[in-house]
Image: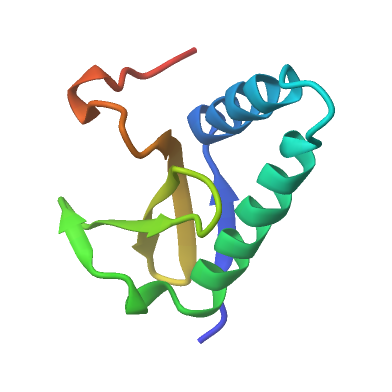
Length: 99
């Protein structure tokens, strides 16, 4: 089955926040490496979303391989909805909906 990938506004905001953080670290080009690793994770879940276990309320998590971030998503029919890209040490109770 082919899946369509949608990023929520919150996930886009999370990605921008992480990118900006890594961009502030001089001469390491971490922001580019972060985006490349994120793209690898997004490609993986687009191809193999059901290989990742349901963690809570139908949500699944894909850990990035080189950065301490996780892609949080749900599957609805043929659509993968990414609702957050969170740092692995972040307390889930602190997540709030941003506007």
